[in-house]
Image (cartoon, rainbow over all chains, first blue to last red; front, side, top):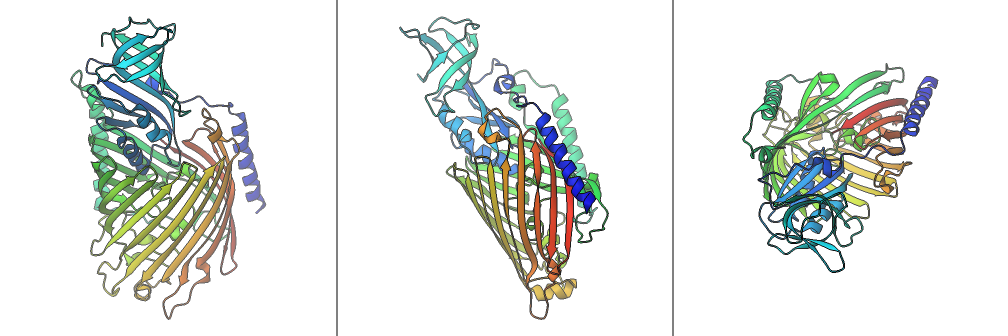
Length: 187
Length: 383
């Protein structure tokens, strides 16, 4: 009996020591930007990428994730891999970005969280008189506020581009805005 | 504590199937593809899996304190999903149990989406009974061994051949309903009740069928509720059994918030025809089997409160009580050894959410006043 109790104590100490010795925060998983495929000539009109963390391994969770996302994506095609969901829209149409994000961000599964969201689409830039920028999707008129870092070459207003941007605002349930990560002219 | 090794032709088929899929995967990766088509075909085949390593002192399945200890690569499961089209896919898992000494098909089914929130499912199906059978990946529970109620009262893991639907109604409600092959009562026993009557989808007798369904309701506040029901024939036209029926009712609740994880499960099995089952099997089979457990856990590292955090350190405790001779047919007396209580306490450290290092202590008591203390160590993963 004693040696069993000693084993438990030793094991608990070992686990606790390992836990305490580990860095305060393990490295975050590869977020969406690293996982986004390069835009190709056949790239669709728009794509939404949701980077996931947690249980995507069991059959039931995968089925539920598919059903939750597909219920919010009429006209879109969904692809699901182990750590991300991609929803693609082949032709110009309104993209229900908020609904797509919240279909998983508000999930009730036992262990699943959305880490980041990327949005990729064809459209044009515009600059308001106050200097703020917007991105308008081709043919649809759907517009999002946009931030462009100094490291990115800013295209001329009205020029057709393909934008890859981080989506902000969904965690706070606020208005969605985009932060440009990549801009390809003439897409 | 596991099903006996079954090396049937079906196992050979499964092995060949696995080999074929592995070859297909390699060809899929290696085959040249037309430019532009590559993006369309990517990610059609994906792999997933889980596994766990156990140390038990003494080994499981005994009330003998002097029994030997055991270390085991208990489960190593490889699964894959293949998308034939965006609406039709295959999902399957093979379990190389006890360091590949036992090969089992965990499940293998085709899903056909009838609508965005409703899918037709057919093949070898995990029974949607209780909260664990479909979520049996070891990092998803805190103890080294699965809760014993979900072994002896709700067989886990449990798959049968059949078909049915999987769906959602709104964001909060999920449901499954299947028609499946029934259990086989000739394999029921006193200690583990209906457990050994599972077919494992291998050459399953289909003389008797069963219906099984589950409803789940979850709130964003952290509460989730589940109800499962199963009813069907189990004599499979075996001589001497007569008409045997099995019913199962299982209820479960879970609340997670602020690092706290509370869970409760209740299950009751009804066996109509237990007297003839007892005669044919020679086992002290009950006509009712019942069990419950309550579990509390707390994450000292509060991963839930830190969006970027990935580590958890859970302290947990669980109380289980289950009796596979809860009610006996006329003429049979309940075996008090089958009325069992288990108190389990321990820790689970998850350096990331898909890896779990576990240590716990079990204290067993049964109706004969026999006791046993067991130490378990484990490591588990899923991907």
